[in-house]
Image (cartoon, rainbow, N blue to C red; front, side):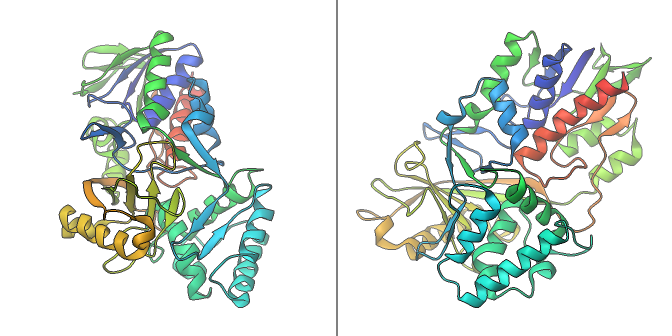
Length: 425
C-alpha cells in the first residue's frame, strides 16, 4: 500500500514503523517541527529535558519492542528497577526482584508506615480483585473500589498509583481501567511491574531512533506540514491532492476531528466531546542536591501539588536537575504556572528538607504544562473506535482500547490501526 500517516507522535511513529516493516510505502506528515507529540524533548536553557516526565513499566511490552525494532539501546536509555513508592520520611514499599505477584505480596508485608491491619486489608482486597479476574462494575470509580481500605493504604499507594497511571483523581477515575493496569503489571510475567525511567531525553528514547529507522527504510517524512484536507478517491484517499491507498489519522483528537468531519460525522462528534486533564512538570535546579530515590513519591495536598519527584542526576542525566510532576493538574493550571512553580518549590523544601538540599536551596528552572496531556479516564467512557471509513482509521492513546492515555496505549493503537488496514486489504 501507499500509506499516509498523519501525526508524528508515538502512535503515528508506531504505525509508520510497523507499516514500513510489513513492506508498505509510508509517508508521514507532522504539523510541528518536532517529532514525538506530547512526549518529546525540549531545550531548557541549553539542557535537553522533556515537555513532561514520563514513566514506563515492564508490562509496556509493545513500546519496548518498538524501541528495540528501531535500534534504541534499552539498557543504556532506561533505568530499570523493581517498583518502588518511597516517601521522604521512609514510608512506602519496594517490590523485590522476581515474579510481580509474589513481589507485591512481599512488598506489602514489609511496607513501612502501615499497621498489620493496613497490610491485611490490602492483601485481602488484592486477592479479591484477582479472584474476580480484575473486573468490577463498569460504573465504579477507584474511590468506590477502594473506599473500604484504610486511609494510609489509599494515601500512600492507591491514590498515587491511580493518578500516575490514569492522570485522573481516584474520585473520578475508572476502576475498571485501573484494575486492568494492575492486572498487567502484576500478572504479565517476571519484571512486569518494574519501573523503567528514562536516562535520556524522550527524543532519543523513541522519536529520533524511529525517524532514523524510517528514513533508512524508504519512508517519506514531512515535518512542519499540517494536512489541510483529506478526501475520498475511489478505493483510496487524497491528502492535499496526493493519492494514497489508505490513511491513518494519528494526530490529536482535535486535528483528527477537523479532518474526519466530512467523512465520519458521528466519529468526529464523539472525539470532539472528550474531556482532558493537564499535567504540569516543574523543573527545579540545585547543584549538589540529591533525592532519596531516583523517583520519590510525595504526599499531595491543598498547597502541595506534586505527587512524584525525579532526580535526573541519579538517572544518569543532568546532575542537580529535578522534575516534580503534578498529575490531574487542572486546579493548578487554573491558579497559574508561576503559582504552581512556587507551590512546588515550597513543597520540595518542606517535604524533602535539608538532606536533599545540603548547600543551597533549589530554584525554579522552568514550569511546563501540557494542558491536554491525557483524556479524563472516567467510568464507562465511550472512546472513539479506530475505524472511520473504508481504508481510513485513527490511532492515538485516546482511541478505544484497553489502556489509559499512556505511551503503551499510543503504541498499541498505532500498531492496531495498521493491522486493521492490512486485514481490510
